[in-house]
Amino acid sequence: MIITSRSNERVKSARALQDAKARKETGLHLIEGDKLVWDAIRSGVRVKTIFAKETASVPDGIETVRVSESVMDAIGSAKTPQNLCAVVETPDCACPERYAKGLWIALDRLQDPGNLGTIIRTADALGAAGVLISVDSTDPFSPKALRAAMGSTYHLPIAIGALDAELPRLKEQGFVCVCGHLKGTETLPPVAERAVLVVGNEGQGVSESTAALCERYRMPMRGRAESLNAAVFAALMMQTILNGMQ
Image (tube, rainbow, N blue to C red; front, top):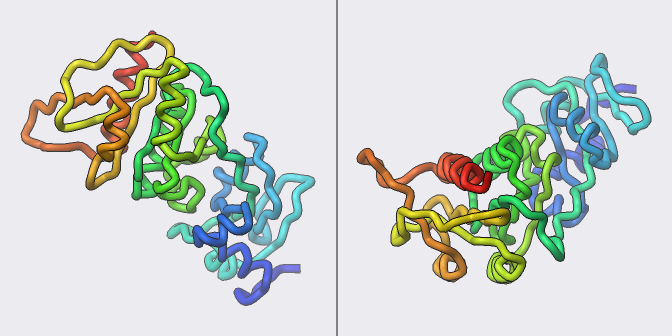
């Protein structure tokens, strides 16, 4: 049977996951597109239900609901047509007791889901240990953030917590915490095996309470631009710090 009605209860429940409140209440989120669905499955994420167009290929052993093209468009938010969407259990994002060594990226009140997803994708590509997201940042499991991350959300640890509690714990565990700051020095502190890069809010930067827990670093700006996009800054800093750790 193919569902052709947008008012179908299962369709409405899936579409509701576009909203952060529904994701929080249900512990579920929605992923859109063939690549992201298959990548999530390969990464071991627990997929509850797949919504698929009539001729789309689907994996065995997962409940599949066939839907019309108009219904698929109603479920998702992507501008380009998709063959698959899936309702997925949101992974446990509790902060670990002990953080794995390496470079962690901490996001302080980041609000743009595209920036957040891009930072997660870059962290994955460069071999960071994980991403720590403040509780007042945007949701890493929103559709836009997931699309920007291109599957990397499921490739490395994602922790969500209060930075004023987690950064002191990280420092106790031997991590050097570095943040971008206009009043910082242009010399990075020496880093061995454990470092945290704190990336601040797009408009306001790192909060003063968070900056007080960090070594403040001002990236040299040789041209006339006064600042960088948060995701671009994060990428440049990740590469610089990781090169220094090798």
